[in-house]
Length: 61
Image (cartoon, rainbow, N blue to C red):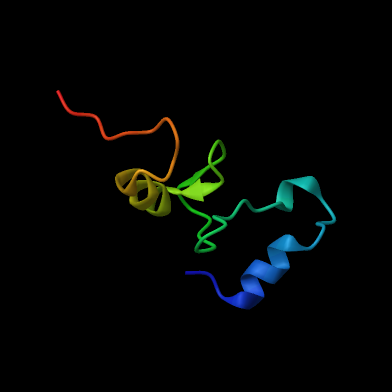
């Protein structure tokens, strides 16, 4: 989980566009980030299993 300082630093407007860091809105994690949902893979899985993301369900065959 990201510290408050790290989250605040990434919210600031960056001098160069390549320095922008995408972070999960729930936990602040930056690795395993999914742009389409604005979540990291761990939070995505938790919410998907709870059925809180519309149109997403666990596959089984």
